[in-house]
Length: 304
Image (cartoon, rainbow, N blue to C red; front, side, top):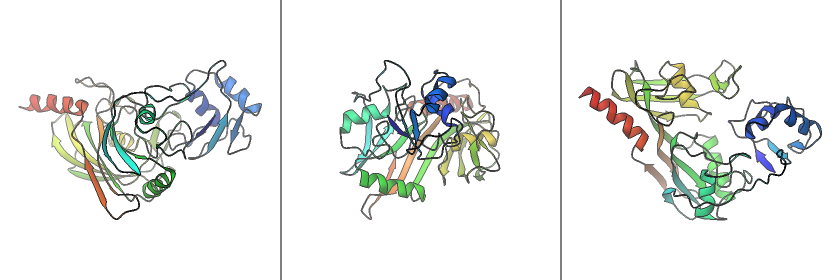
């Protein structure tokens, strides 16, 4: 089996990452597999303590006995917002994981993409991530670009790396945000004591988020966020750092609000990018999803 470490894995120990992928397998069993040479990192045997970097190639035998990991196409309805012969843009619903893991191999966006597009997906990122060039958190909904071939994947990856596209989010934040507009420029890296989280840390990667207030409700604020960089959990970390975490984001300190939703009220609603191998500019925008609409309606009605 071959997988590639994404930005979400960067900074984690190799053994911790694999034990998290298998959700419950003991660290000692993973460490034993690494020590016996059953796990290769970029073609070489590494120690369990190896700190992963983005795009590291991890090859390993199945660590769960009598289990065969295979990613199957599934007839899951997925909204295609735009497409041409080289790529598509889809609207990932909240609650759906972007790509499979060795434990969670069903019900993901990749399963839906395999059914929808078959072999017309890039395969640069390995068998677990066909057609995936960037991702959204499980409970964040919205627009994702899907390359249909490797040439387009490389084109989009380069544009993403150089920040040559515009991606905007909508969110409800806890509390009354103090400024109408703010550029949050704070470095983000792996949390020092809770490796499943990210945090603002001095030695983190440069991370910039533009925040614009759209509407105020006193106990909550409706905002638009423009990502200048694209770090893991960037919006959630930056807004939590400002003491206004995304509404219902239990991981980053919001707690559960009066309006119950499936975790954070956050949507990637806008994309602007150059159509691959063309000078044409594609601009896409979607309506607020059910989760966002539900919370907005609640606060608007309370104010009325």
